[in-house]
Amino acid sequence: MAKGFYTDTTVCIGCKACQVACHQWNELPAADGGRTELSGNSYDNTERLSAVNWRHVKFIEQITEDRSSSGFLQGSRWLMMSDVCKHCVRAGCLEVCPTGAIIRTEFDTVFIQQDVCNGCRACVSACPFGVVDIGHDGKAHKCTLCYDRLQQGREPACAQACPTESIRFGEVTDLLQLAEQRVAQLKGENVDAYIYGKEEIVGGLNSFYLLVDKPEVYGLPSNPELPSHNVDTAFELSGLAAAAIAVTGLAAFRKGRMDEMARAEGND
Amino acid sequence: MWTTNPGSGVALPPQWGWYVILYFFLGGMAGGLMSISAGLELVGDPRDRNALRIVQRLAFPLIIVCAVLLTIDLGTPTRFWHMVFKSERFPSLILKPWSPISLGVWILTIYGSVAFVEYFFPGRIQNRAWTILKGLAGFALAGYTGVLVAGTSNAAWHNARLMGALFLLSGMSTAYALLMLLLPATESTQRKLSDGDFWAVILEGLVLAVMLIGLGSLGRVFWTGWLFGVVFWIGVVGLGLVAPLARHWIAFDPRRAAVCTLAGGLLLRFVIVMSPQFPRVALWHL
Image (cartoon, rainbow over all chains, first blue to last red):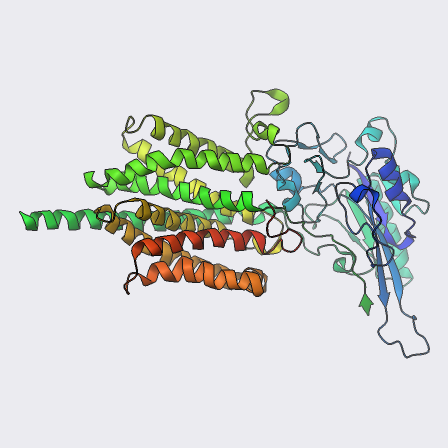
């Protein structure tokens, strides 16, 4: 049975306990040698998922443009979301990896074997969510969904640390049921909530989200495609180009030979 | 409603730099050379032997340079062999035909083997099947690099379904140009190469135009901006397409035109590879 995360963004409080727990358990180093640099983007100073940040809490401030009204900030809101590898059912990174370093585990999660990866970076450009990154060791890194903890029957560090149960861990089918119930509850309260990561998103995401705004607002693609989506067509068009250039080339060479023969006969 | 930036959640640049740009350029040229030599063997005449000899001498060193560029571009170069063998079950081979990079490794291996035989045992194998294998290996090497680019999640690259065709045709035109540069001007083969090159450049221009029109606003990244715009219009279009075509109608030294084609081919790879990654990847990134 597939294991995964259900992240209910409506109860995330942006405490970053998940980021800290992930760093601690996986012994991830600090970025830039621990140099603190403020991004100027709300409370988000790690900015994205990377080789050393396998969890990333996004802070999205939505402020009304009308600042003159007496009700300034009414209608404004602060969205928070703990982002992570989606452990896609059809994973682009796994699909392209030429070394077999990226595998699907017995928990249906996507895992990078560090002793096999050679840092070719194909997975970096293949991931439509910008999850995989190359570390200073020259190898690709991302969330393992705490594979070592799962093997011991424990839940991932981030889910265990989350104080509001925004991050839930479990069987994906169970989590989806839970999420559907939550969506129904929120809709009853006139909140336009939905699940991001059902089957229409690259075959389904084993780490999926409950969102209350468009995916782009959270920095997620609304219609991500697998990198292989256009590969067959690209190969076929290359074949056509090869045929065209072969015909024109052979015709040019043949004409050249005929011209030479005609010239030689003329000289005779 | 005013919304702050949620941070990246879309495809990251693969950090391709000059090793990859040079590989795409030299690999395309090497592929083109092999296919041209196969064509000359099929319908050429004995006077083309100097051109064939140049290809026999060049193809293998070129593919070695390509392999070196690809290896040093890896994050862990000592593990380059993981691309060919299953590291945990050596010597089992690994091939994922649906992955352009995995398929490309085998295209390189087959091309390298053909080039090796041609370099160390020139003329030893002479039959139609071998010639056709050479032609196909050349086309595959020149074209797959473009498919590799299209097989990414970056929107501009991903939607450029004609990228493989473009790289293949550009590889052919640069190979024609290199051969015309290296052959003595008096060789009768020059005329054949010149005619072949004419069609390669015409087709390349056509495919480039159709690709950019098809990409719409996504394609702007390749041909706008102060840097990439100038390089695209002057380098890729001016040097790479207009100059080699112009010599067919106006008095323009064919060798200079060939140099222009080579420069245009290199700059095409530069623009295609760098523009969607810039500024996250520096222009001088290796």
